[in-house]
Amino acid sequence: MKKTVLILVAVIAATFAVYWADKATRVRTTSASRLGVVKAGDAAPEFKVKDLNDKDVSLTDYKGKVVLVNFWATWCDPCRVEIPWLIEMQDKYGAKGFTVLGIAMDEEGKPVVAPFVAKERYEVKGEKVSMNYPIVIGNDSVAEKFGGLLGYPTSVLISKDGKQIKKITGLVSYDEITKEIEGAL
Image 1 (tube, rainbow, N blue to C red):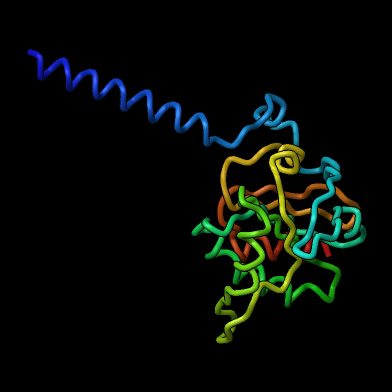
Image 2 (cartoon, rainbow, N blue to C red):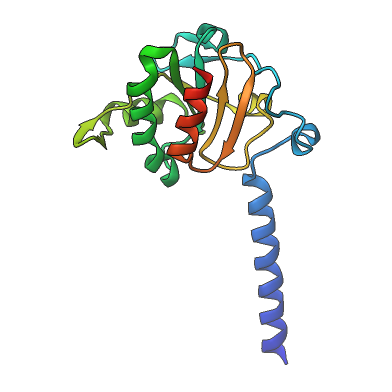
């Protein structure tokens, strides 16, 4: 009987520990974002962040371009799968008025992101290449402006006139997103 009670107490304690760990690490969203207030056709939010050279970057810096805002993290395996596709999109459409804007969401910020970007190489068309698009350091405030994040990667395609076209949580479908980009160019 004593053994059963101890096991029951251990299970209850483990359940509470998992609950509190989940609550503490969950990406925060506002009630407005959970209700889907931010949607396609809405104006893209304005924000200011720092790039890897500590220069201020804002979305207005890309006015007149189609922008794929990509929230990612160095530890995110699906993000690493997606990066070669983003490099290829930047190569293919960059000269036509398109850019990927990578917003790194690592809690440690620049000390982790800058060495990662400098070191990592990705297989693209048989060559090992580095990330060829702007990388900035994000934060929860920027994520909230886009309606919050349910996970990484999350991408938002923005039109030349600053309207949100599409929000994608999870890996982008290369074919689907390139069709959207071509339609917006």
